[in-house]
Length: 310
Ligand SMILES: NC(=O)c1ccc[n+]([C@@H]2O[C@H](COP(=O)([O-])OP(=O)(O)OC[C@H]3O[C@@H](n4cnc5c(N)ncnc54)[C@H](OP(=O)(O)O)[C@@H]3O)[C@@H](O)[C@H]2O)c1
Image (tube, rainbow, N blue to C red; front, side):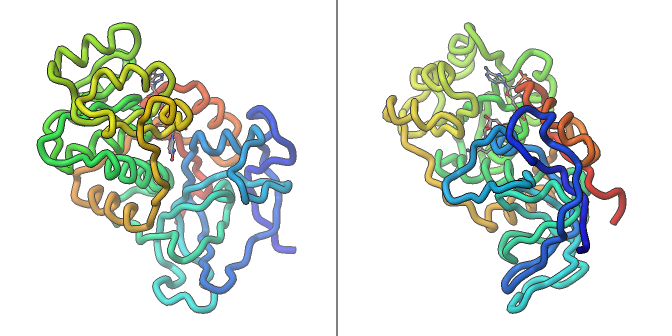
């Protein structure tokens, strides 16, 4: 058996269950490509998988390899694939499997990596790039809008702030702790502190209310947002569907596509999007990467370095 290294689970639980192990190298079937992974992003989705949560229809028989975004080099192409070739430098998304030296995905789940996009950033680009695009689209962000983005300094918020500005928003108000205010300002947002003074700070900037809200926190933050927006129908939450339904806020419809990733990657290539890498961990330290993201604080993106060189 030809094996590869993966940071994988043989049981569910805390970060300590994530361990480096040898697993079979996957093979690219028809319509699929295999990518030699150089870098993989770390997401809250992965920590949910590690704890034993999974979306319906996702097979989590052990060993489970988490990881739903990656960047690397195509090294095997399945029958019927026309748009990819071995040697292509790509980034892409999957549901599981990216915390490994090789990952197999449908050929439509990768895009060419812009030359200017470094590998570490590329590995952590897809999930939040697509997520921000999806959410802002449904919020109807357009030229002239005043947009409120909660948890704006995090990985998802970092994309959302810049994309909203790229799409013509006049003002983007971003919530973060004081330590991340200078970072938010560097992205072009007006920073405000979350907590008891949130509503007063937002009203001071937008006395008539904001046009639209992206909630990445849920709970009381989502409740407070209802009183800060002109029309409730222009709020979307990435995290609290249950409360959104209770408050009469439209649900986010999952219409993720590779086109969204292509567009955000193009924005990067044109210099309109940047992504700060909060910390990079080697694959063998995936458990430490999970501990870091589970603090719930920090700016930018946590990534795993899977291979040192192209
Ligand atoms: N539905 C989807 O498709 C989808 C996709 C991606 C992410 N998400 C969800 O979106 C959320 C954010 O993800 P992420 O990857 O950006 O997380 P992250 O990188 O871990 O960032 C978390 C951010 O939250 C901020 N924060 C903490 N407590 C806050 C509060 N009470 N109010 C406002 N901000 C607060 C932190 O700011 P400070 O450091 O300044 O405290 C930090 O910058 C997660 O819950 C994730 O599960 C959903």
